[in-house]
Amino acid sequence: MKRLLADLALSLYPKAWRRRYAEEVSDLLSSRPVRMRTVIDLVRGAADAWLHLRSVPGAGPVRIPLAAVLTVAGAALSLLWNPGIRDVASLHGAWAEAASSGGVAGTMRDSARMLFAAAGIIAVLSMAPLLRTCVTAMRHSVHGPAVRMTARRVVVTTLFLAAPVGVAVLLFVAIAFLDWGYPVGPLGTAMIGGFLAPVVLALVLPPALIAARAPALGFDTRSVGAALASAAILDALAWSCVAVPLAMGLEKASWSFVAMVAVSALLSVGMSALVARSVLERSRPMLSGLNLA
Amino acid sequence: MARRTQELGRFTDVALLVLISLAEGQKHGYRMISDIEEFSGTSLEPGTLYGALMRLEERGWIEPVETSERRKPYRITEAGRGALGEQLATLRRIEQAGARRTGIAWGLS
Image 1: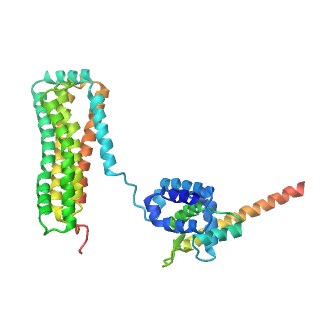
Image 2: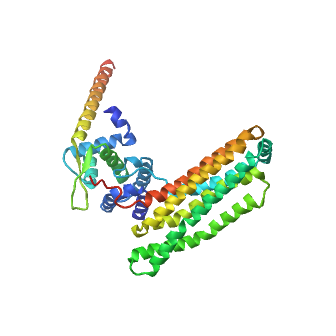
Image 3: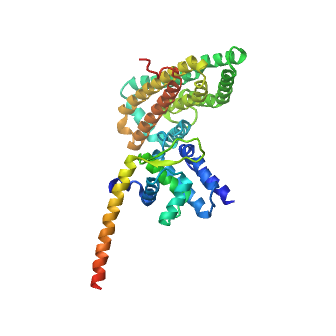
């Protein structure tokens, strides 16, 4: 029983530590009596190894999983939209002030909506060439079984994620163009895309990352990365369009509302850029890192 | 040495024991535990021993010896010998100061 507990305690250590020392410690445990203090000492050692991960020989830098970062960022954006941004007085007050200065506010709102929409459309359409290549790869035996398996996983993952992407697109169209739901006013309709476009980009990411594992799909994966980079730039441009009417009506907006919009913009652009960078980084040609000189 | 061993935290004493054990020659974990118990009376558990080994290896004071055997031995490096020498010299000064002061105290009583 105590040996089992000791083995369990060993599994608590960081992966890099286990790779380096687990075999030696297991051997040591098998050649001496295991007491309760041995188990407690191992648990304590595991906590210490996690706290000093950088001291483990061969351990790389601590990396937070990309999926966790994007999930937290997506959840934060959702909370920033509701209840963060839904400050009726600021939304309508700032817009009324900006609109009273001429037609610039309206132009910026339309530009923001179109740019956010373009970002989402580019992200979704970027998958089309990759999917076509994957379907072709699945049907032809000229590709090895590994490529065919990867292609199948890309297609299945894309089909699985099509539903949430569809929901995000519908929400955007309904709120930005049909004034559906909570009355967020023209300023709200201008910025809703900034909360949904990064989510669409993030949903495109899993199949693109799966495809990046197969060099045979590298060309199409890099195209997805380039398209996502364009989408991220459009997202940033759209937020700059939102900033214009907000700046014009700043006097009528509360400081907390302005802060929420600023944080939302940073998070939205950061999330989009992270998605694009992840695909571009992982779809690099295999030999690009070698210095042939 | 004092500054360099500060980061070893609660492993300072264990690290010293490991360095002393390895100063005699390369040893694997099991032999280190037996040797340390024999010369110091301290019974180390694997979690504590490998916490100290990890820190000593990171500082370059010990290094694993390449072997085909399951049990991987470790040996002390030149930097480790230097660090051990400094630490022992410090301990010697403390011991001498302690002996001198307790000697005075005994003389007064």
